[in-house]
Length: 232
Image (cartoon, rainbow, N blue to C red; front, top):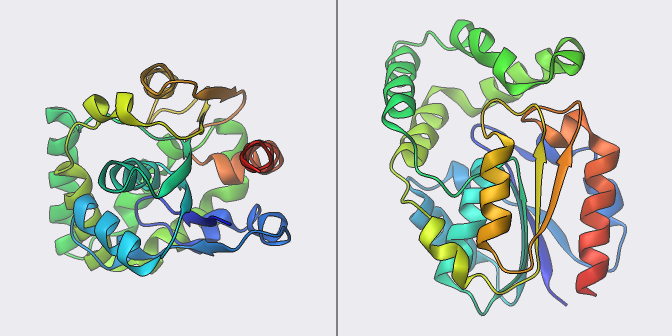
């Protein structure tokens, strides 16, 4: 049976999946949370490391940068990736404006001005209804990545290729989920993924921003379990 690998987003860790992991791990399928994004310098290298460390067929569920990583792994090993769940993600490359903003952030991280910048940008990660209750956990998770992790992962995202031309080659069952109020990867990014991947299922969640697994944990959990059931 295929192993389910959960892929956190940029500067995130296993805590991102904390509200879905117990139910997913209770099934017959082996489930792991990957940390390859913390140990490689590019999406291409992250995907190669993931595929080298995880034998056999894989189901990949990725949030944000984790979704980009899942797509790259599917590009590298299409015969081994048997299912994709792409949450709050995109196949588009960074725009020049995003590259400029990330480059400015890297300068701040290099000078150890980390937490003020993270707090200033945290509002973009959540729907307003969820920000107050989730903010401190979010900041703590990003701080665990440290300056080096924040710099490395931002550079990896900045340098990623345009994955849109690869979408037509994805042949495995794919679930695409987005928050309707996601400011970082807007719903148009999800629609583009779903339209580019034959047979992909698209779900747009109301009252939800970029941090889907925390903002709408029950809905995300149900969608993932239904996706897995369809694969079985």
